[in-house]
Amino acid sequence: MSAAPCLDKSPDKYDDCLAEMDQQLQQHAKEYLREDPELRQQMLDQLRDWIAKHPHIRQIRTDAIFLLKFLRAKKFNFINAAKLLERNLATKVLHREWFGRLDIEDPVLAALVDSGYLFPLPERDSKGRTLVFSVTSGMDPTRYTGQQVSRLHMLTAELCGESNEFQCGGFILVYDFSTITLAHLNIVSFNDIRLLSKVINNSLALRAQEIHFVNTPSAVLTIANFALQLANEKLRSRIFCHRNWEELHKKVDKNLLPKEYGGRIPQAELIESFKSRCKEMRPLLLAYDEMDIEISKDSEYSAERDEVELEPGVIGTFRKLQVD
Image (spheres, rainbow, N blue to C red):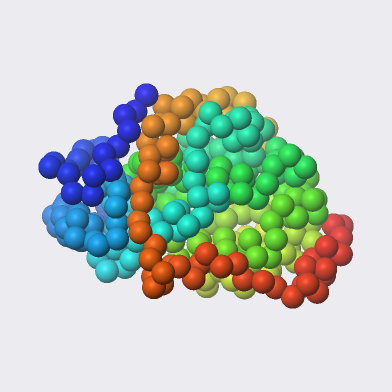
């Protein structure tokens, strides 16, 4: 089991331990992210100095792989990376019910993992991208909430984000929507969608390369169109809806998918591997709840405590949608 990370914002010694990157990944990082060893260390030093002097950050990780997540997400633009880190920390403090408690020993979260709703796949594609797979039927909408589903997404992202490959190559999300119903859609409100869209656009250090929805009912497309209006243009251009698996296979190598979808490794085996990794990394994942930043009344983030209310008619229209 991994040890809990140091959360001292100004430790006596910084953790520069970083897994070795193969030649292909190094070249990818240099070409697409501007990364080279000299710039990487320079930006790490600068970001650590900024954290140490930050008047509101109380506790945070300063190890290399954690900070590189933000630097790589912003292609080593220091100002943008520092802002993303600050916003990420503030978001998790303000909305722990959506993005915190990443504990595989939480019975509800463990059951959701067992259901097969979301799990990463072990092999990367030809472009070095990590695949994450979701089976909608695994999520019982009468049993789980939108917040619990969001926490599993965050757990998966933070777990995968501990690798150079995930940070540099980015990831592809594939959703099996074969069994999705209105009940699945109703676990989140329009206010929830607005919050999640804002967080995805501004607060997450993730490099989503493609998102694929397979066997998507028309009602889901209606809601997706609403959500897409709130997404940034870059993310919108990377979302694809497919009528069947044959269409997906034109864009995603089916050999990388679970065996039940044309690949080589059974879904149950993939889930067990994911669970084992979650247990191994549990101290690190729990440490996210200990990271802290002061949100003062005059902070730009304090307004995010207030939920935006929508007209009742909008919600009523949503409830009347039918799945074909």
